[in-house]
Length: 340
Image (cartoon, rainbow, N blue to C red; front, side, top):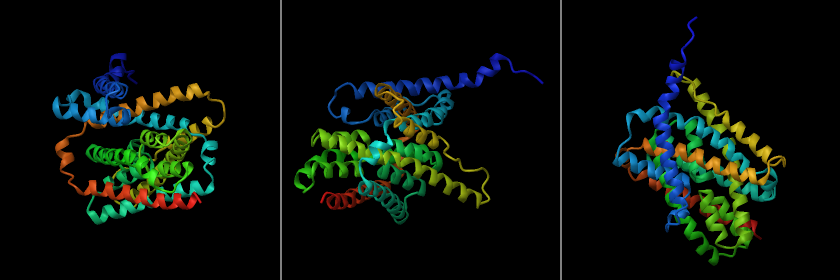
């Protein structure tokens, strides 16, 4: 048996360096813009900024061919590790504090939004993979849900970018509209917080919209949103099982992936509620989570050709708008009933 030399063993790792370095640089720029205090940028998450900066680089300066292996790697290990660590940001105790009725409302919002969006996508002629990505981003937690769902949907980078752009656009509109609408609606602080956490797309957007109505409202909205994040695990698992079964029933070669990292996410949720992880460590892990996910989304942006994105047309955008209106309207009606 021939033993590989150290040089040959390190060659594959060396091929990853250009792409990882480029993705890390784009992610660093995204964090710098987030913390710059520039108007408008502070309301966007580093994840959104990472894909925007990556797309800007790809479609102006271009993406070196040598960077491709490292960018492909960034969409595997760092992405999965980031999703696993995301579980440390929520505990079962916090989730149970919402109550049975509140949790049922959140579950209904997810299931109905996902199914309705996929159904409407078929009627509008939107590609099934893109429709599922928009459904996951709208129904759960924006960027994190989209990239996690794509591990089993396995659509192309343009579809991921389009879905991210759609949920960012309508989530940002909701972030500014909800505090205004909340002043006109007969909702208590907790009722408004539940509505916001149940329907606004990104965690950062929920925080902004929730705390605009007060400290208590913001805290309850954030917990409700984290409960939606927890629902990411069963959704990705079910999609993985469905995709695997469908692949087994066809003559296509290969096998759909099982998202085993989701079990790591659930383990981190249990660990976060055990009391063994100090709050300071959880905060540091949150920053690491954001950095890993920003690296993955920087890779998506660097692989996205805007010309192919535009070629998707207006239908996916209309689908995102209708999905947003659905989840906003249905959760508002249920929040009004819950608030009585």
